[in-house]
Image 1 (cartoon, one colour):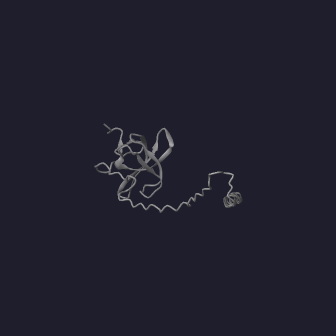
Image 2 (tube, rainbow, N blue to C red):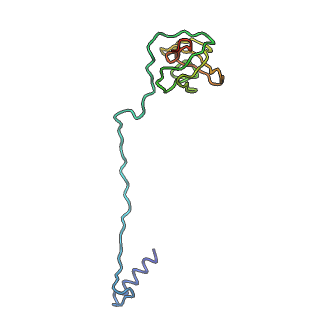
Image 3 (tube, rainbow, N blue to C red):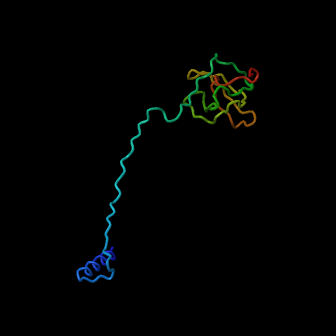
Length: 144
């Protein structure tokens, strides 16, 4: 800043004397304005940004499975079945059962939130277990 002021002062004095070391060049001062704040963009969505992950269960009456029966996940349109901590839609989701994944029925049925719930365990990994609603399950014996 001080250097700029000294340069401007030197050039001004040289011009007043009529002698300039820069010859025909005269000082040019360019003023660059400070950037202004960009107004915020207000976004009002007219439609949901994410698709809802609520599936319409396949039609049919609640199923009856037996303890030890093998069942598979189906009818989720490839999105999978939420396996929950408790038999309730409000319960925490522990994992996602993939379409056609096989589970063993461990406990149930329990009625809650308009669904019949079954406690399932993966027969190959018993740590993968939880409660699932029966409209998205079918017995391996009845699978086409």
